[in-house]
Image (cartoon, rainbow, N blue to C red):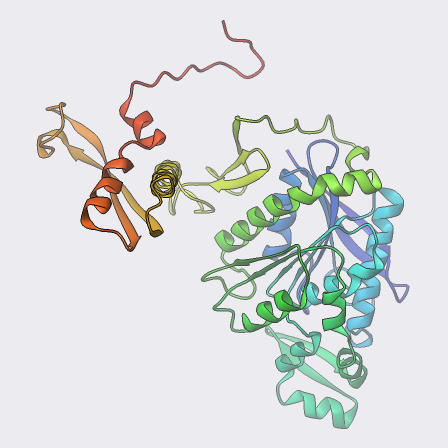
Length: 421
């Protein structure tokens, strides 16, 4: 079980900032710092769900309210992008002093721009993930609409953002218009993960391309297809969290070697066991009544039941079964074609599971009751003749997972911790 504790620390202007530290059940593998979106708070769905999921993966996460927002003290009208960066540095300093320096930075929307800007001031940071982030922080001025003219002429104005009223001063516009963001991204000196929805109507996906192009390797991009800017659908937030957790795991060991984050003591018990090669571990994730976290080595997946039974935070067990068969099929065809030096360009496999009556199956030995049926459609692209295509279709039936599903399988079940035999 993960835990969460409230913390406070002094912000860049001297005001007390409110934060929440999500901790894993055991010694954290690393510490992460999360920056929320413009005028949001640490408790919005994207922040809380991603923080909890990372904690379940063994990574402690500090999320906090910027000055003048949420439960933090101070006046929002006195803040700007530079003060947000300074607040992040103060939050990192609190972690460094009381726990361990953050090795992972995560930012949502303008918070993503802030972590990109703060990273160069935090030498312990090894990985930065941004969700729906603008390539230039000045992009946020589009939310101000006609009020921008009033701010420039009057020195300040009250604007409505997401149904709430905020006072913004001309100093905010001046500060945000002078940020060397492209240079910061180019000199990030950390692994970068860019997550963005192609249907984001607040910050267009073009911003993701600009960030990705400006950065150096290692860099990765993941499309949050169908998600809105705030990740209001729990399934979208859960998916983003799962991806970040899996990606960040690659850099946890690097961070632990650099600053000892992997040996920091917490009030929790022993650290989670290291993944065992060849072992798939499935455990309840807490994201819903049936939501599961699947760990395969350094890879983290989600599984769930579709609504209304579950929360649809991941594929169903049968979806994962079909995925295994589909992956094995495509790999087997690729290996065979490469060995034959055939001009196979691309393979795609579509599968569907259903239950049918035995009497409706002409090729089945079972004559009564219902049986499982898997429909598999294989797309084969390449300069191949008909004989080669038919041979590839026949080879599909010889993939190892296909054979396993058709063979007699023995499943030995024991209680964890009790040796079998």
